[in-house]
Length: 114
Length: 113
Figure (cartoon, each protein chain N blue to C red):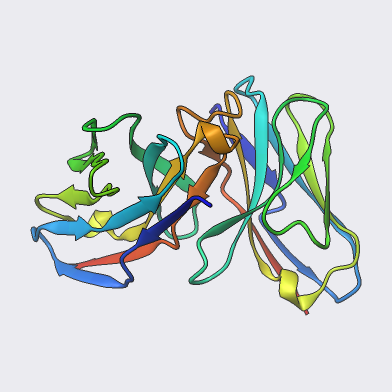
């Protein structure tokens, strides 16, 4: 099925460890996004890529880096994980940055940092 | 800046009850408005949208009307089912602010048989 695929689905890290969350879309979308979801806070934008070759900070970028590897793939890296980064992470994509038709979301990565 | 405010949950209803989830927004321009639904353990799915004032979005028995005069986009359904139990998110996209989606905090709906 067409859509947004995220890996892994679950991950437990120790404080200070690093990891990369992977995201790929097969809808030929230009724009991609990383959000985190925390109880009572909705979704907060971490980073986004309006088009291949560009990335920009969102609302909560500290502690994260991203790479737009090609048009399909957009990865999120935690260089030194902290307990405050325990969250559910969602990748999303849209045809273009104006999001007239909304976003398509992946199923999420549940990350626990101990 | 732009923002979205939703009524707090959880909302608990009996099957076949009428549902309203309130959503109001603040935007500098003329945003597009969306409702997303998140079922347990899943990602967000687009439920409905409206792109200009007085537009009505509808899907799966859910409706919402874009009210510019009250800056609102309330979600309604005439008769809820147990399978509607989920978290509902209101969101806006303002092209004057880069077009990125801004979400409300979500409202959890629980429907009892």
